Image (tube, rainbow, N blue to C red; front, top):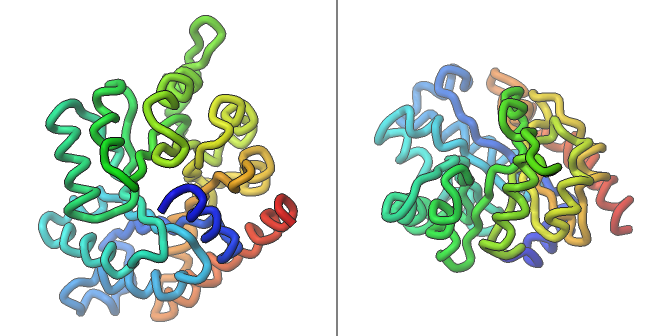
Length: 271
């Protein structure tokens, strides 16, 4: 799925919502535990309830890896069930070099078959370029994250340039706006104008709305470009909106609330 195709999907669904599948076995409704694969059963119901409201799904790989082989089987089944009509993001935050990086890329792009994977930039171009070698796949590079600790390093300044700006300005030469996105947290809505000065055409994956309290209005008005350019993710605020037998219904209601707000913002921007 290239940038133009992603924008067409956004316009069709009137949504730039990504649903995060951070599926925790200790938090899913008790009645699902009787199934052989409760993680997949939970994900399946969330996907069925939100398909028409979002354009992307983002499984956080750690929640599946923590369960060993069974968890990875649940992840594989989930990716297969999502299908081709949504953009898939493996939130893995990998970052290594050489053959290790190449094998991480192969694991996610070929074995798992996702459209994109989050990658940490700390080790530089040789940790990212193996991912960029895969055609019709995306790297989503960490730039300005939504956690409190982002201030420890990401705002450090040298010669008038903050570290996250250095990441953007250096890495944008490694790929194109058709294979490289950036993670920018919704808890920094005031920074999106600055970020757009550096990467005006790239898509941004924006975590932090919902449970983390990010500002969708501020992010959207400061961060949209002429292809929308945003995938705004909500995980806990949607998938754990309810914990009873009607959890999927409540997840849909939570997702729809976000989607309707997004539809208004898209109308405001594109008419």
